[in-house]
Image (cartoon, rainbow, N blue to C red; front, top):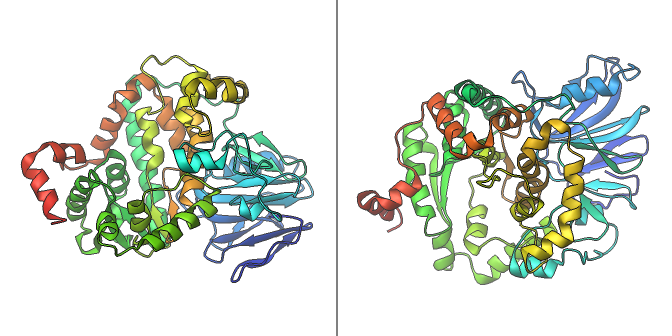
Length: 475
């Protein structure tokens, strides 16, 4: 979205305009008009959102129950859209202000360019000029050595990634926090473990059920905990799933494939299950070096020069079954407090290490260079979140890069995470990190899901008989 003339891309829609702002978007991206109580168009939503009651937003129109001239318009508007789960961006272009709101972890990626007054899904989309390379995080070092962009940085010195849980004011191009509120609490006792687990399973199942009932979806199955939680929380709705699959992208992932196949059989998805062998596609030359190199560069251009994934991942991503959305469950790492050290004490050094910023040779260099930026973000957190800093860093700074920005690089499908929900985030991080890190919440969630006693990938690897069974899949 911008006030300047947008570059035309074949097939894209450019018909949505308000107050001098023009919105351009891919035709396969779902779009919804947002109307106030008087039927006045006040903006749009792009993407997929599930309301707190389990209903899909739209799909063509969403009607507010209050008018634009309501003295509490913004308070009511934020109260309505903040609970939405899914992958979306909301534009509100009104006489009361012009704002852009984003999904809970910015899964639908967003960057902005203040000078050009543009907000877009990727760096190239935000520019009307060549890239002005960002020397704070040199893209050559990220491409060659790994690491991530972070703390709002992109490959362009003047294009910045948004921070989750903030809206972008289009009049000033400043970000303002809208969640959590100052009085939101995240400190339930460990004794609430089973109750929290049941609430997570119920909400996750409701979100997933709404999505698969309204969109053609593919469900990945693997040997990990999150894949199992996603599938079994929504078991009653899986008859809507169009495809299920597992992919081999490394030596270890053949065990994931074996477990995925067993889960598909248990879930009644065997007739829709597909094994994707990225390793074989590369080893046999089915994907030539030339094709893989082209996919690598396309990935980097879409993401703004992220470190490219392996050839096996690139090939497997191209073979994902055709669907409107491929479901993901990554945000569930919060249930295991995966960002927390054993000491549970806060330090900027540890926080930066989890963001894995590229561009510097050592952690000490990163600490000296990026420490003030990280501390500045910490200082802006509401007081109620100060005991959950690492969880919020995961949501606001890591996931917008690793999921939102990174998954944009794959062209075959769009990725959608039913756990991308502020209510689910609140539930997961409300329990003490000490309890979560010991996987007590994870175990309680699986009890609430009634997950089967099918071994995990690591157990398959350690068992000689099961390992042979997994080997047979790719003999």
